[in-house]
Image (tube, rainbow, N blue to C red):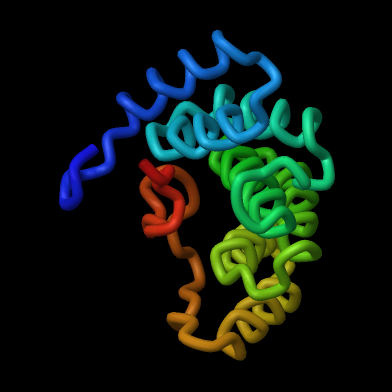
Length: 161
């Protein structure tokens, strides 16, 4: 990709699929393809790839950037996918894993808050939103904000080229 070119998830999926064909145990390729699949709304495949990345490298030591943040992002993607599929218990568990590794993950806090609202646990939802508001440069979390592929894009999710 050239500078200024828009991120193309289809191209990313194709590129990372080829990388995985060449090296099936490439943690980064599974992780990054999972991000691209999440952006496309391919929830089952996003869960499969991020799960494989976590299986290959449960501590994130082989991840190309900050290990705990990359691992947290994988759990966040899984939480988002489970939430979008209505699997609230699984979503809460995955978001909790992401927040444990990255307590400043506003998207994970917001995502879990939205799931708690769906479960009628507004006290827990409000607690997560309050935690997100205390973080630097955090946009105020909104009750009922969209969860899933159409949610606010994360500019850091695009794979580096």
